[in-house]
Length: 498
Image 1 (spheres, rainbow, N blue to C red):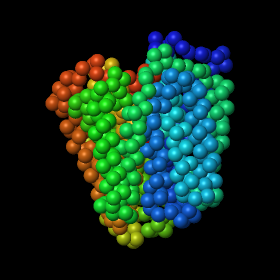
Image 2: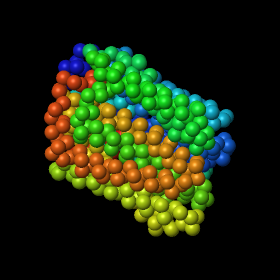
Image 3: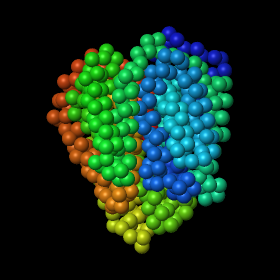
Image 4: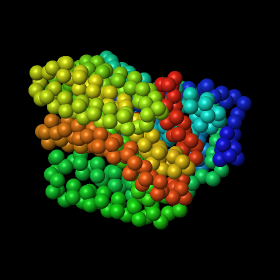
């Protein structure tokens, strides 16, 4: 146990590390399955609730925006008031939100309940990582535990499309939310019985204004992108949202520079590897969010496939996204991040480009579709470990956890933007543009993979003062680092958190 945790930890006699690991795996299963299953259910939701494409976008992005905005705040709050307490609250909110989503009488209520889900979800993943770091104080045991925990993400991604298809086809779209209820209740019971309470002796100060600026920037930008096809880019509402997003970002940077404990310190972005890794994280998950959204609508609305057939078609992507990360981790550990980043960029680009002819007409070519899905899955499977490694290597060792935490938050931002941008293209009647956007994200990863791993980039990282740091909760930093280390170990199955 580290000095930071030793001062304020309550460890009941009944606590068992293996059961703590089981609880944390259940929590990540909840969050990860919810994402992959829901994509397959979108056309059914659209038909039942009479939704537009923008309504489907909000069904996904209302959750992702709230999650991205509150991740670091949830970790800070857990350090202050108790991790077990916040984790229990997160399970209650997520499980209750899921039950409410399944009962939603209209699209508006579904979006509201999805936001409630997200408030709970932001308390699960980061706090679970801190709980694991506390339950497994020995580095080797901790790496194995977080390797198992991360592997659940990959399994859920591979199983999600098929499971979602079965549920939607046999019991309707509401069943994808009901599935969360028994899992959440089981996690609640196990947490109450076996997870010990812990706090940080020196929790970081909260930054409510910084959080408000982040939420304003993400929310208004996403709203503008989603609603612009219907309202027009010159609409007063859209222009106002874009100005508000730019203003919030412009205010956020100088405000955070003046704080002793900033939410995100802008000075860290002087490091090319770190700033490049952040952009690559956004690009990778923009591509993933857009790819899943666009393909689900294409397969079910254009080709007329069932939800189950949609899940089967997406299997090549899901399986390669599961099996490639351990290989990527081994390459990162032995050769560095450049080769996996180049493979990732090439795979995502090729998948996006191949999807253009594969989806041009309703006369589908299954071979082209499967090839596009396989190439994209290969690219995405190689991207997570090298992004985290590049981010960590771009800052002094003392700031490595900060780098990994910010990279994780950037992934959620990218997922929200991916759904917004590709959905806007589809709503505007320019479906091929969605695939070009995805291919462009792959090209950006390819270029940044070369730029951020060269000698010049390394020199910019050496100029960062170790005293210029963001005080992300220490246990959250430790957990992110152990997650990265587990990705390098040949005997650990691991996929980065989605």
